[in-house]
Length: 444
Ligand code: GDP
Image (tube, rainbow, N blue to C red; front, side, top):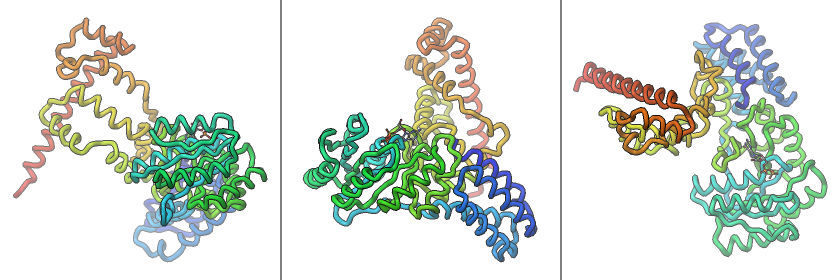
């Protein structure tokens, strides 16, 4: 997971000061020394770290902390606010054109994830904002970039404007604008060419496209895994093109966090989105405050709730509750539940959003075994409908058939059946407890 080392160290540090009823200057000094080391180790820009620590120190020995009733907690609040500010404070949204289409130019080095992000962004705009974007293939240099965008367009069922690899990118952009207006696209997302390094020719070309289309946004796509290199790239692109925002990709990898924490401070430009995986729905608006909270082990309940709202159907959840109460919960329901949870993203990520999960015994090194989960899924899928609803019918030959069909063993099938029975019993106990509790405490 991203930020793991940093999160570990910062959490240890704040734990020490958290419960203190009195915080001395020496305590603050000790804490800021540790915070400084943690940030440097996470590859945060040296100057950014220096300023950050200075601000935290000033505030931590100031009145807001020293005169409060819970100084330990206040110090943590200061650290969290400053971390959030470092990443831009408020969420930074897409600037929209007064008159459509809104034009977004995607720029960045080869391999940063520009083409993929173009597709993800289009998907996000349609899914979350009900928009109709046009994708423009203006990366005529990287072999296969145009094909890649066309494939993404097909997957999404969205139009891709292309004039092949022989055309001039500025002409492509110009004609794409005319096409978008004629076809009533409200967003135009231009995938421009990248290079392996920042060079003058590339910048010249990007400048020309910029003057031709007057974009509302120029999003620089950078790879979070490259740490300070990403920050340097961001600096040079910004100097030359005056970008409007950054998309940080590959935050699902085990990046130390240096890029995320330095880019805003160094370039003055906010991170607007974060890439959290290779799939088209793995792009998230970047919320500095929530990210700060995650880094400090306070979880990210808001994102978790949003994910649940997007993926879990409320009526279905109510039906499910009813089924649990009446003990009519079947393997069919179980399978559906698993799929809904899976849609919310990798389980490791979900766990990292739960407050305190990192501190819970046994959670720390818990690697969710996605393989095991897919075995369970395969077993249920190999059952007939009748078997899913009524597992009692499963005799030895049926179990053998299911094990074969799912590529597992009879022992695994038996284990799942046993677990399922136990789960049902537990549900019954829990729902009964709920009822009793209500009766006892209930006064009308
Ligand atoms: P471009 O040269 O900048 O257009 O880069 P691509 O869009 O072709 O992406 C390069 C590689 O990075 C591809 O294998 C993508 O699947 C991968 N990639 C892009 N964004 C992400 C992300 O957020 N997470 C992960 N894990 N991979 C990503």
